[in-house]
Length: 93
Length: 305
Image 1 (cartoon, each protein chain N blue to C red):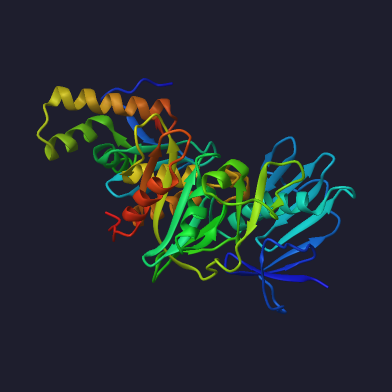
Image 2 (tube, chains in turn blue, green):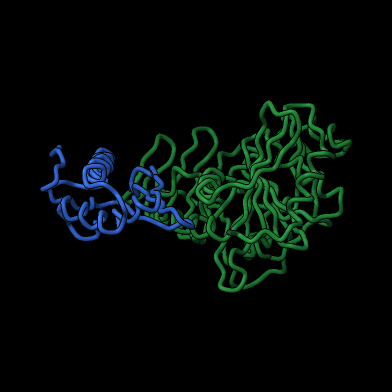
């Protein structure tokens, strides 16, 4: 598995579907039946991944929208993308 | 001569008599059929293969050693080939449980393993593990003048007017002997679910509400070491979780090709429906106190937000 860094381009994996439940986004692995819930910021990152994106661009966009320190934002986004990758929800190119 | 019944708002033509169902006027174009015939050995392109069943898009095939073979297909028909010596009540338990729930999945009706009653606010459902008190709750509400809409199977569908519409199931309640005792009910004269079982069937045709109606609330019943029964509203994602937990035959959803639909529908229903958890102490069940608590909560208006 390719480790995700700031210059990595990540994209959504196939085989997942999402559905909003109030302010959370539920996500289903269609074949395995496992499902997850994404909080609003996680859901926003997922929505940005509609097109393949460089991690640095995701971080920049989030930083503009939320008052968060650059180093903190980078660390949080990388950790979250790492989780998505572990669960097979995204692929790193 | 086939029998006709009305179940989940559908007209059923059946070669098997089902005294647990509500009889209906015969019609030339039934929505669903139970017929006897030769069940195929295999599906052409199975998606999921387990030891005793297989699924493909819109198809479910079941081979139960020493019991019989069943084929549920296209949301229209259950083909039955039971072994000769299997009693009809055993066939009905399987056909009206597993097979019918799968047929409803195929029709994209959202099947819940819940009991339910009709109230002036709409349909109220009770779900939970076996033994949590689903049947006891509806029986207690029957005694208070409410009508039953389901004992353990009910279908939901999204409706432009009603939001979520509940489609009533069978006009009966299945009760364990000890639950009947807690309710002060006699089991004298009641038929057993199966010979030798400690569970009894109480027919409730007179106290059954067959009309589809708006879903008002869902209560998930659980037993824990609490001093007194308590009702707590569930967050929306927990509502979503209980809708999935209460689903019949979850393992077949993927192979039937309806898992994504099921997931999306659960999310819609969770967004539109009030749900709460009723936690009560272990036995002995204080029926009156528990039902008072639920009754007060379920008669509130409850905006889904």
